[in-house]
Amino acid sequence: MRIGPKYKISRRLGSPVFDKCQTQKFALSEEKRKKRGISLKRPKQMSDFGRQLIEKQKIRYTYGIAEKQLYNYAKEAIARKDLKPSARLIENLESRLDNVVYRLGLAKSRQMARQIVSHGHITINGKKVTIPSYKVSKGMKIKVREGSKNSVLFADIKEKLKDYKTPLWISFNEKVLEGEIKDKPAQDTTELLFDISSVLEFYSR
Image (cartoon, rainbow, N blue to C red; front, side, top):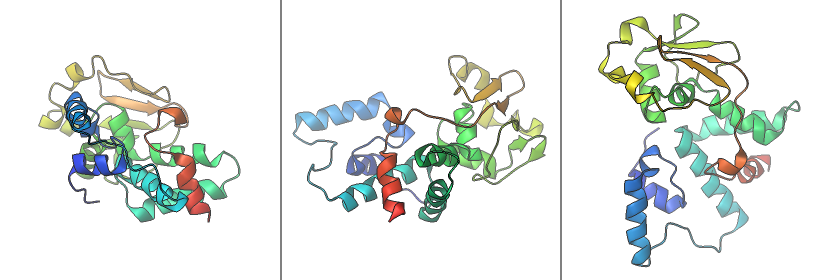
């Protein structure tokens, strides 16, 4: 998925959907813009359809996925009856291998995590996996490949992870750079950068 200027996209969507835009530098730049009368927020008057499109874009840019992938994740979440659609969609997105690598703190962004996976630096239960969208499940062990531990990608990784906290559904052993999926991914919807109900409404039509 090709991504344009991240600051510009975040301003257009009215949300800091990229890790680069969740920094003090970006916050300060927005403060300066506000003082000049330029707001991060989009115009308040917007149709439901327009709002749904914006929220859909926020999810796509947050997770770095294509429209077809989001469509499939959403349709599956709506079709399944064993879980609320919103929880199921979050589970589908968070269960991606590139996202798990990011959540483990092994990459500073999901984009970087996707490259790490694609270049063969990650194993699942001892086997190398190079598919960023690979769906992980409870009990799986995600580890940095032994031959990759000396890569510049993981230089000083233990120092970088010193104050990092992984989500409750993942455990992580910093000594061997191995994580394990302890439960299904879950996230407080109030902490999301997008309105997941609007996205589900869009795909429910």
